[in-house]
Length: 385
Image (cartoon, rainbow, N blue to C red; front, top):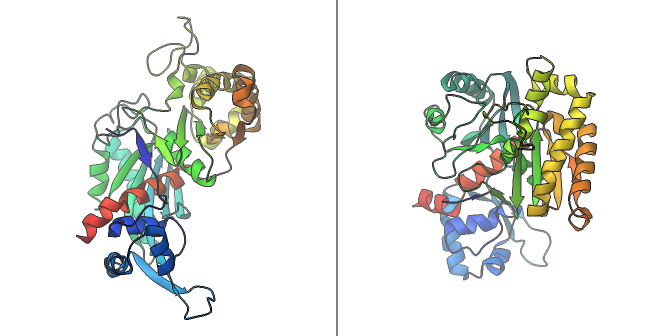
């Protein structure tokens, strides 16, 4: 069982197989053969033997000469990522964001749909996949390498199935990946939406570690990224901070998980709107309704106090607050004040707490997971064999 998931753009490692060599090549934009020899320690003959199947499979290409060297110009070798795309289905409580991205997670085309994830999984997935079909059809000379699905629930790192999720009744054990792969015969990866956000935020801040990212919208979730690896937890529930009890009072609000006193029962967008007698809808509507409310300030303060405990455990370099509520200035201010008040100064002195500036971090995160899976050394070696 693994509790970590690695992303795309892996660190360079010796090229003991074609897959390992491709991992080295993918770690930066371009290489000369001489640079690859120095990086990997391979003999010239072995390097050429490893490169040959990568060229024949179209996984690498020559990209013109390097800069002047005083002799014959050396050819640059690059990972052949042109035209390769990832389809991302990012399912929120009331919204599906469907995007076609390049392998770095940059959106090429996207669409946002109204959905209700509490509905039947086959119906929700059909709606999202139909939108994905239309987006893929609008492209030209593209190859789909995989599909990434972000979900507001825990995903088992062993089975790849969604575990019981309070906001998605009826989805437990549903073969999401198999249903999608029946439409597109490519690898399909599932991940919790908040953890996918965390990977996207980490990609936007290379070298920042540990990084904690919070998605604060209808629900509350978090992700931890350490040295490029995403913490999933023993059973895929790492980051489910919304169900930490912030009070033991039996008279506290009832959470959708069936318990009382959870952070989400006090502070989630769903709970704040329900308290006003309003039916939650889109994320934009959520932010518009709550941005200036005193209830949101109180909720953000509780979130900050909860994160102070996480700061003591993880000692992050940066906390990124995202989601339609998390990126609001009032939330950032209240969370920052609460964290600094409750955690030791030696843990918060250099701690950066910022609002997310990423447009669609889950797409970046899911693209990184899919790319890392498809081009993992073992997967490439198996393909070439």
